[in-house]
Image (cartoon, rainbow, N blue to C red):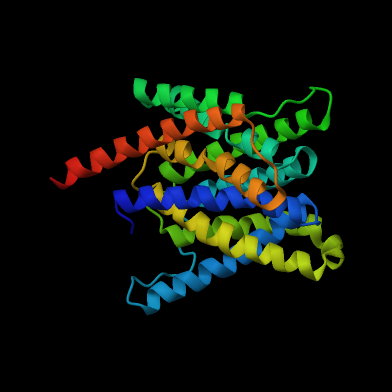
Amino acid sequence: MLNRLQSLFAIHFVAILFGATGIFGAIIQADAWMITLGRAFFAVLTLVALSRMFSTLGGKRLHTFDSWRTHLGAFVLSGAMLALHWVTFFYSVKIGGVAVATLGFASFPAFITLIEALLLREKVGRAEWLRLLLVSLGLVLITPSFEWSDQGTEGLVWGILSGAAFGVLAVLNRRQLRHVNAFQVAGIQNALVFLFLLPWVIPSLGQVSASDWWLIAALGVICTGLAHWLFVSSLRQLPARTAGLVVASEPLYAILFAWMLFSQVPSGRMLCGAALMMAAIFSASLAVRGRSAQMTT
C-alpha cells in the first residue's frame, strides 16, 4: 500500500499517462466503443499479471475478485461510470480533437467538489475553492478559439460529460471502495466495462486493423491498467479533490505531447493558462506534503 507521499508522486505520474491517452485516441482509427472495449480488456490482463507478481514477491495473496459480492452496487455503478467516461472521452477526441477533449475532461475537479460539498456535505476549505478557481481560469485561458456552431462545441460537451462521469467515479472509489484492494477495484471495474460494451462491439471486432490492436494494447497496459491501479491506490491517502486537481494537469501533458508529435505549438494564452493551473496543482501538492510531514513527526 502506498504512503501519503508516494501517493502524491503516483497521482502526478497518472496525470502524465492520462495525458498520453488523448494522443492514442487520435491515432487509433477504430471508433470510441472499440477503443474502450480493447482498453479495458488489456487493462484486466495487466492488473491480473501485476496482482500475481506482487503475490509471488511476498505480498498479501489476493483472492481473485473476492470483494465484488460485498460491494456489488458500488462496483456496477463505478464500472458504468468508467465506461461512460471512456466512451465519451474518445468520442470527444474523434469529434473535437485532443485539446478540446482533454480540456472538457479536465472539468471533473469541479464535479468532485460539487458532489462532496453539496451532496455529501463534506467541508471544502477556502484554499481548495481558490485552487479550483485557478484551475478554472487556467482552463478558460487554454481553451482554443472556436465557433459554437462547429464540431468543437460538440466535442467539448462530450468532454465535459466525460469529466462528470470521472468525477462520480473518483468519489465512489474513495468513499465506497476505499478499503477494497486496489488491484480488485481496478480489475473488476475494467472487467465490467468490457462486459458492458461487448454485446455492442462484437459485430465490429473483425474490422480492427493489426496496427490498431497494437496501439490499443499499449493504451490498455500502460495508460489504463497501470494508471488505473495507481489512481485507485492514491485515493486511499489523498482527498479526491486533491487528486482531481493534480490529474487536471492532463491537458498540459496532452498539449505538450501534441506539440512534440504533431508540431502544434501552444499560444501565449495557453502558456498563461498552464501557469495558473500548475500554480494551483503545486500548491495542492505542498499542502499534502506538509500534512504528511506533520503526521510523521
